[in-house]
Length: 100
Image (cartoon, rainbow, N blue to C red; front, top):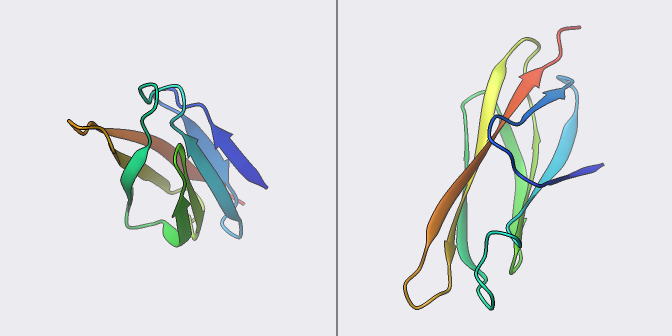
């Protein structure tokens, strides 16, 4: 399952400790006309295992797992655009491990 993110401040997702899920940050609406993502960085809190990540011109996907039951963790996607004067922006989501 992939969660396509139209980011909103304070987004939080519940995740089972055994889950390994992909979250996709879609930057299309934020990017200027003709601009694309030049580079990206995934910044995860210590309690998140980043299994893989990949980026395209307008989206960044991150595949994660390892969120302990009851834990509150974060994943930040930082992008830099390919414009003459590059823009940089962060989007952060929260993950909360489901208590079994």
